[in-house]
Image (tube, rainbow, N blue to C red; front, side, top):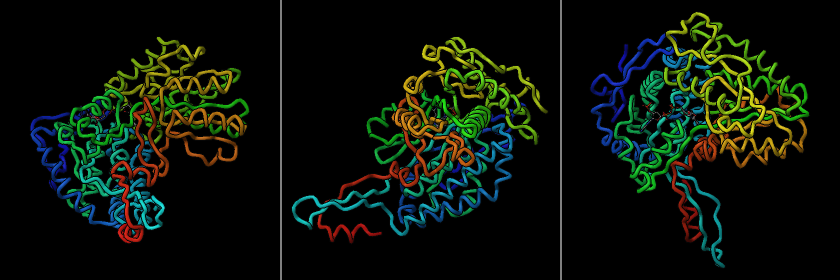
Length: 515
Ligand code: NAP
């Protein structure tokens, strides 16, 4: 069993005491421990501000991009070892582990290219505007990096991608990072951090890792710092409500729960219908449904709901569940015993609220090469609520596992109203071929989402599944989803930068704001 150390002030250090035990979710056996007890996190914050910040701000965007490129390359080179760590500690089959690890290297590579494109500058200047009748007196908005630290607190489900996507954006913006992965699955994050540190490419103080509980880290946040959190809505609420965070207006970005919906339109062609089935089945079982972007509600024209139910059962029923290290297995266990208990209770809650199980069982499941009594295995479940508006929990309670609920609808307006009951989500997907109906759905759903995916005949073969988060498009959503926004190409950098309107002599401004 290994001890996960933290990387603080340029050194790998272990906390005192036994700390938390990380398990193999397939067998329930311990694989590592992590403790942050006794570590001086105030000193880590000062180190980031005093050493990491100046080192990063001395670099141009292109130079910071080169750092990201080196990290991306190293992660890719150590891909197999990272995938093994994910199989061992997150219970993900190889295909799901690749999704996480390749997502990490891919996002770093994307922001490396953006850095190259932003070139030799160290800040971003917007267009100049004349402010008075004088052609000489202008104003220009300029974005400069904050002088503090970016603290990243991540969820258990993407130990590689979650760390890398936040890191890429903050480093490119010029702000040093202290990253705190979720403890339960921190082995992959730890191994990835080792790989990144060993590149020697990270400027001193620009990256620190906390393996284990957050301790008093957040007590040290102040007005020039930024906190980016991914996890449950309850934790998000408590973190953003901290006194020091509120008193000093620390920037906070929250990515939380989401009842993502897929909507099938009445006129969908065979190709579009095929894409809809493929995506929904994938979103239910990929990473055992432990994705913030997984499809939790499936809206179907009432006349088609029986057919969709049968077709989805056929697809989901073919997924092989069991030991994630086995080559035939496509769905592994949930990450922790608590997640399993929450899943079982969550399905019960949906049933109590008016949904019924039309296929599957939360715990009775046939496994390949695994012992159901030892690991945290669950079965995929398809539910259906024939009176969708009254099944409140279906729209309010995110069950973080392999289940989804079929909801019949009659009109486009009703479909939009049902999706809106989710209170704000990360992504909605609509599948159809009638331009007017697609347009009405997209405009009706957009106020409630950070992203809407349109599946239609011409892109049925090429479109990505809605659960895939790409660095070029924003990730986040209003309301229940946390009200945050990450990624989105250059847009993501703004969270770590201050916008300042600089006013004065146009010629002087133009000269000053080069580079
Ligand atoms: P969680 O219990 O809220 O934990 C998330 C992170 O917060 C972990 O790193 C955890 O550390 C840390 N944390 C908990 N209490 C804290 C405190 N008082 N101070 C500082 N840090 C604290 O959530 P989870 O169980 O890992 O994740 C599951 C949830 O995340 C799901 O509900 C899902 O919807 C949501 N999620 C959202 C997204 C998104 O992008 N919107 C992505 C993935 C997951 P420890 O592990 O050390 O306790």
